[in-house]
Image 1 (cartoon, rainbow, N blue to C red):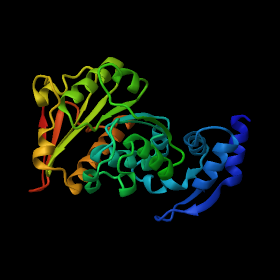
Image 2 (cartoon, one colour):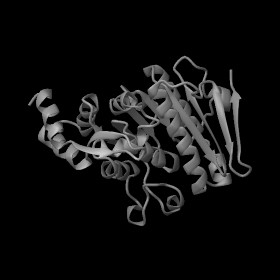
Image 3 (cartoon, rainbow, N blue to C red):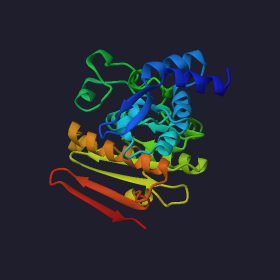
Image 4 (cartoon, rainbow, N blue to C red):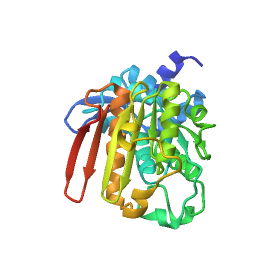
Amino acid sequence: MGPENLISAIEKHAFSGTLPDGVLYKGIGAASVVQLSMEFDTAGWMVEQTALENGTLPERYTRNRKIISRDDQILLLGSTVSVVGLGGLGGTLTGILARGGVGTLRLIDGDRFEESNLNRQLFSTVEDIGKSKAEVAGKCVSQINPSIAVSVHDVVMDEKNASELIRGSDVVVDCLDSVSARFVLEDAAKSQGIPLVSAAIGGETGHVMTIFPEDTGLTLVYGHRPKVGEKGMPRALGTPPHAVSVISSLESSEVLKVILGRSGILRNRLLIVDLACYAFEIVQLD
């Protein structure tokens, strides 16, 4: 069945609705998207993209529309984001990107959930202790937004596999807890010509930045590359849930800005947040 048949099927499933501001719209529900995805043997995000291109708004994105336009939503649905690290930052960020409508997510983490993760890691539950973070995250994304295409990689990223894991992504997201691993990911992203959004957290402080392939990048923050993994800040200061939520939300915002080509991204700039005194500061790095 061709695209014309899909457009016709979308029309049959469409309904008329009214947005909170009184604007009328033609919409399509999540259940209909799932049904058409199966019927036409295509990804749900492609059904939603086709609907938008033909004037039908997926109901799940109606509250995006004031900030994310129709064309923006189409672009997000056609984008691929690799998330490396699915703990506190990565779990919350993944949930945000799935709800926002990033069409394809690659979830990369070789770790397992531990009981100490329960205070802050969005996808962790008591029942999931000992289970793969990547596998659990993939299942949760499919429940949050079945239209998202998810690839799960239950592996530890290293110098040997990093480039292949992120190949073809539009954006790579650093949600790692080791400084040395961040440098490995940065090298891979640069070699693939992919922008990297990086964040780190310790206690009630954290930072966010974006690195394009031609930028100096992490050296401007950490100095020379460490020889071994460094997890000093999170271990010494802890990782409370409210701080994780704030920093991951800011990192998610940066990912969307990069995909949509918006101004004000944190390129060669470091956003530093200290929630203890509600201080937000941007430092120019170059």
